[in-house]
Amino acid sequence: MSKMTYKGYTAHIQYDDRDGILVGRILGIPDIIGFHADNVVDLRAALHEAVDDYLASCAKLGKEPQSTASGKMMLRVAPEVHRAALIASQAAGTSLNQWAERVLSEAAHAG
Image (cartoon, rainbow, N blue to C red):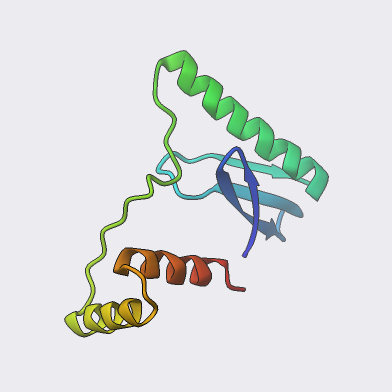
């Protein structure tokens, strides 16, 4: 997946073959923020404009901009996965939370 980041917001980038343009959409928030351009330089500028416009609109409306993530996560997993993760975290000498954060970070940044 191609992506761009600006002010903590990450956008997924795709090529639209039908229209011959690059299209981006901000990920991780319920609001839909999209943008497009013919080339990467203009696409980056369009991303900046889209995020800045979103933040300005929120300020004008007195609305709190949606955050991309709070840092709190609750997961439900099978008991055997929970047990294996607990054992792995203890073997690594860390808390389950620290271990899970490291593993999720590695998985999210792989590729």
